[in-house]
Amino acid sequence: LWNRCLTRLEDELPSQQFNMWIRPLQVTASEDGGELTLFAPNRFVVDWVRDKYVERISEVLGELKSGPLPQLRLEVGSSRAAPAPRQPEAGAARGRPADSRAAPVIEPRAKAVSPELGGAAKHRSNLNSGFTFLTFVEGKSNRMACAAAQQVAENPASHGYNPLLLYGGVGLGKTHLMHAVGNELMRRNPNAKVVYLHSERFVADMISALRNKTINEFKRFYRSVDALLIDDIQFFAGKEQSQEEFFHTFNALLENGQQIILTCDKFPKEVDGLEERLKSRFGWGLSQPLEPPELETRVAILKKKAEEARVELPNDAAFFIAQRIRSNVRELEGALRRVIAHVRFTGAQIDIGLIKEALKDLIALQARQISIDNIQRTVAEYYKIKVPDLHSPRRTRSVARPRQVAMALSKELTSHSLPEIGESFGGRDHTTVLHACRKVLELRESNPEIEEDYQNLLRTLTS
Ligand code: ADP
Ligand code: MG
Image 1 (cartoon, protein in one colour):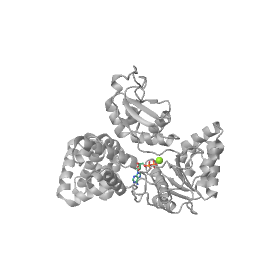
Image 2 (cartoon, helix red, strand yellow):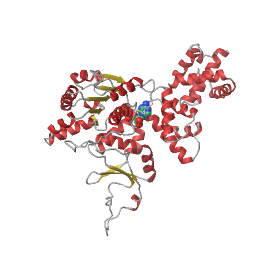
Image 3 (cartoon, helix red, strand yellow):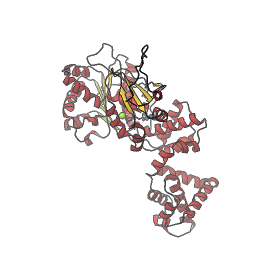
Image 4 (tube, protein in one colour):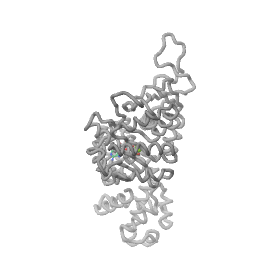
């Protein structure tokens, strides 16, 4: 289980982060599998991992594991040092090495028990109760998907909305929205049997059902639900037998008027290794894309998450973060978490300075994705001049001012040094760049029009 979790995290995280914090963790599982202990080399790593990664780790474990989620513990030490029993035995001589004591137990986010095959009469849902429509921020990038999800929640299994397929890149809210439908279905009808599972788990459960000759129970279970939520169906690619089984389940549910909700990281037609008949069937209902959120939505999401964490996030601070973290909502949340940790640690107010400090490395990473080239093209277009004018020695105001603005933007948005920037502007000296940056700052403060131009350009470059 841990190895599969590692593979997933390795895919998700920047490799530097993965290698630094996650790879060194050692793991032991208790005999009954009810507890998973992660050992980190020192207290600092323990704190860091707890702060930044534990939540995600338990999410991934929840997606990969059938049955109840193990208790996750994080300790200083190594898995080779035999862990002491949880309940200290009277007179037990075995002790834990001194450095692995006193690590607090981490409670993973409350997660209900998954359905047992052929299981108990009362169904308990395994939905994440935090993923609701109320906590989902709507914006241009997700409006259609959100509307479709709400439709399904209000009128499950209605014609034209079955299956509902949400697709789009990582961290854009597919899983959240899918759970939101499930939670709303349960709210409206507490007896509804709503089952969420990751497609990897569908595959794993099916294989063990085949091995244990319980495939009929398996079939019966999945066909007995009111709504079946299957996450990340791209994982079915290349797994023929699972696709076959899923195809039959899928048909049975559709025929019986049970709702199916699917997510995929791209439009299913573009997933290699997925059978044609499945691809076409996935398109029978309603497919809606989730796009990366645009600037305004990113700001709204940050404000909402800050509010949920009861932290005052001023508008300019929210814009500052949103302009720099553009890839997806998960990254945005990660950045905000860091800022909040910084606030709690230093006791300071949130301002741009604090954010710059808290997100130093993230900002540098993102900045590299905006090139000076890109800035020059955008600035030239904005001021209706030609890119070569930015390189030329001409000093007329109509080109000198845009050139200075482009230099200042290059300094702010990329991690290039002053000499490198000078080099990109017709081989100018680094003092010229420095002068331009100061000049632009001064003009922005004294001249609202220039400030507006600058903000417009920032917005264009960072949306
Ligand atoms: P995906 O399944 O598309 O990879 P998730 O649904 O897991 O993405 O979303 C990643 C994180 O971002 C989750 O914590 C989720 O709550 C949050 N999130 C994504 N989109 C939104 C949104 N529009 N409003 C609020 N939170 C969001
Ligand atoms: Mg997901």
